[in-house]
Amino acid sequence: MQAWTLDELGSALTLEEVPDPLVRSGGVVLRMLAVQVPAYTRALVEGGRGVIATPTVLGIGGIGVVEEVADDVTTVRPGETALCTGFLRSGRVADPEEVLLGWTGIGGRGVTTATTDRMRRVWRTGTFAERALMPGSAVLALPGADVHADPTKLAFLPWLSVAAGAVERSGMTAGDRVVVLGASGQMGGAAVLVALARGASRVVAVGRDAASLDRLETLDSRVGAVRSVSGRAGDAAAISAALGGEADVVIDALGPTPTSDLTMAGFDTVRTDGTMVLLGGVRQSLPIPYDQLMRRRITLRGSWMCSEETAFRVWRQVEAGVIDLSALDVRTVGLEDPEAALTQAEQSRGLSILALTPRP
Figure 1: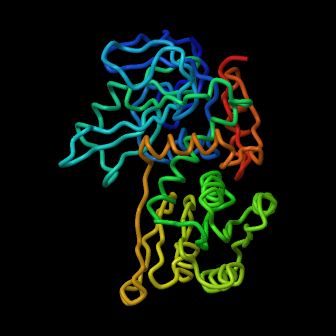
Figure 2 (figure 1 turned 90 degrees about the vertical axis):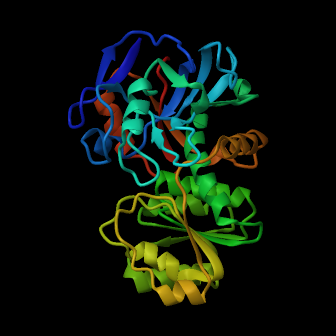
C-alpha cells in the first residue's frame, strides 16, 4: 500500500510503498476514507511538537471502513464505518498512561516512560495511508456513517470530539454564555460548533484571523466575534462587551502563543462560580491570581482528548444535524504529493480544513 512515512523528526514526509498491515491480536485493519491533515503538521514533522517513535507511518484520527478484526476484538465488526481516535490508554487505573498513535502527544505529565515507549513501538502505523492497523480500543463504530452524504466532512469528527470533551468538562448547560479563545483555529472552530449545539445563549469567538472569525459569525445569530489585537486588558474589555457581561464558561483552544495574555484575558471575563477549561497548545506559565480564583470560586480545568462515549455522542449529534457540518469547507488531497499537502494544510483555518482521501 501507499503511505506517508517519516524516518525521523526533521526529515521530509515522503510517499512510500509499505507492506499492507496484517491484523494481529487486539488489532483492527481499516481502509482509510478521509483523514484531516492539521494545519500544524509541518511544524510537527520538523520537530516542533514533541517526540514520536520513528520511523513511522504518520497520521492521527480519521474515518475508515473496517476490513479485518482480530478474534479478540469486539468493539467493531468487518464492514462497519468507524472513527479512529488514535488515543491509546495503558488501562492501569492507579497510574494511567496515555499516548497518541502515529502522532506526538503523551498524556499525564507529558513525560515518556518505558510504558509509553512500548505502546508506541507496538502500535506504530498512523492513518496517512491507504490502510491502518490500530488497536481495537482506539476505533469506534459509527452506525449510519456508511450512508453519510459527505464522508470527507467526517474527517473533522476527532476534532469535534476533543472539543466536546472540553465543553462537557466545563459543565456547560443550555443558556450559558460561552467564550472560545483561539476560535479562528480548527479546534476553536470545533468548540464553537459544539457550544452552539449544546444550547449556548451566546458564543463569543476570539481569535486573530479576521476571515475565520467573520465566517463563524455567519453560523448563527448567537455568535459574536472579537479579534484579539489589544493585549490582556483590551481583549478582556472587548470580550465582555461582546458577551454583554461575564462568561459562564471559557474554553481556551489557543495554539502556541508568545505570551499568556489572551488566556488571562479570558480568565478575567469568567463570572463568579464560572468555569475555564484549558484545551489548547499554550506553552506559557499562567499568572493565576490566588485571591481571584478563590473569591470568585472559579473552576479551572484541563482537558486532553475525550472518552469514546463523548465521541459517540458527537457522531449522533452530527447524524441528526444538531451539529451542522454544512458550514465546514473541506478541500481534499490525495497521497501523491505530501509536501504540497503540508503547504495546503498550513493555509487552512477555522472551519476550513484539508482532508486526505487516500484513494480516489
